[in-house]
Amino acid sequence: MRKLYLYLLASALISIVVLGWLLDTLSQQAEPAEDAFAWQAKLLYGVTNQSASIPETLRAAYMEQVSKDFDLPITYSSGDSLALPVELKNQMMQPEGLLLEDDIGYYLLKSAPSLAPDYLELRLEKPPEQYDSDVFLTLAFYAGICTFMWVILAPLAKRLTVLVSVAKQFASGNLSARIEVNHFTYIKDLELTFNRMANQIEKLLAENKLMASSLSHDIRTPVACLRFGFDAAFEEDDIEQVHALMHRMEKDLDQMENMLASYLAFATLEQKSHLLKFAPTELDGYIRNVVEQMAPKLTNKQINASVSVPAHLQMDADPHWLARAISNLLSNACDFADKQIIVSAQQLDHQIEIRVEDDGPGIEEENWAKVFDPFFQEQGHRNRAGKSYGLGLAIVAKVVDWHHGRARVSRSDLLGGAKFTLTFPCKAPRNTVKAD
Image 1 (cartoon, rainbow, N blue to C red):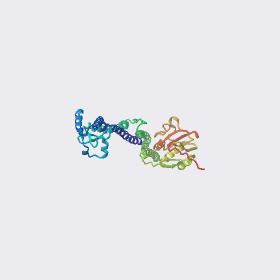
Image 2 (cartoon, helix red, strand yellow; image 1 turned 90 degrees about the horizontal axis):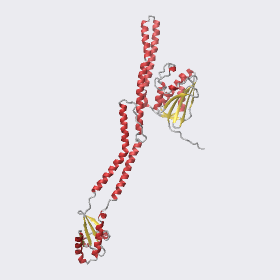
Image 3 (cartoon, rainbow, N blue to C red; image 1 turned 90 degrees about the vertical axis):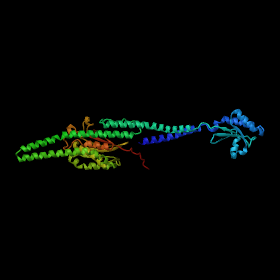
Image 4 (cartoon, rainbow, N blue to C red; image 1 turned 135 degrees about the horizontal axis):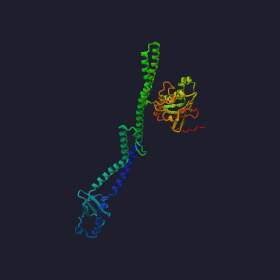
């Protein structure tokens, strides 16, 4: 939006400055009143010089005759009746004379040194009013501003129309509707935000559908076991056998409770995204603490976990949820590793990578794109961890997405098993020079 504000401000300033300059230039080029009566001034100049050579007693009659001959209202007046400052009287001596205005119109006064203090007066009609020109210039100024603003706002209106159209398509059920972002748009951030929102909504709806279908499928097995156990218990006369059946049904209930708890926890996970509290986190000690919390499980599995993180490496993250993501990866690695797990981190330009590698069987390459989907489990790995429902890695992917990062899986070059890499955006490192 900053780009939009700058364009609007720049367009307003440019339009006002440029149009003001143009209109000022036009107004200065408008013909002044003196130029409108240029030939009359020349004529009066010649008549004044001619009358100066005529005896004073004959000048009035001469002016009457000139007035009739040229059909101009020229009169000969005595200077004693003219009350003007000295500066204006001096202006009457100039070749162009002195032009004055009254309610009736203009009158041109001209004299000469040999004629002073007397002078000649030529009555002139007012030229056509200039009000129409002034109105035109005013209208042109505002029209110019509107044109400039239209040039700037037309692309904005077009992009807003596209946004409204795509939003209507999305609201009508076309969840794949997205805005094709234009690099020259003023609202690029808004368009990208809409696309992210649409992706998130589509992803949530897909997860809800998947969870509903998975839950309905997975819960059938314990329900069927419970039904079978109840039927067998009702038909069984041996009390010890009934107790055995009840004990087995209790395990089925525990399994159902664990399953429902996991599904509900994942379903409500998105509601917690607005509670994230980002803070600078020093990864070395932070990751070592997470690994230390997993020590009981690592010891039970007889697995050695090593940590390799550069000192003073920091990133902005929510400490609770980042720990949840790393611990989920460590728990997953514990379930499949044979003896060794490596946790490492490093910064590459504008990215920080956190990697968890193990020496287990790894994940088949065709499943790399599916492993972070909710409820996905490789066929060969099912039930290896008794209470796993394929949600651990889905939670990892969601936490990474909250941090605007990316999660991926590959084959570990060091240990040969699975390698999970979490990539987070960050600021580029500064080049520091140590003082001698």
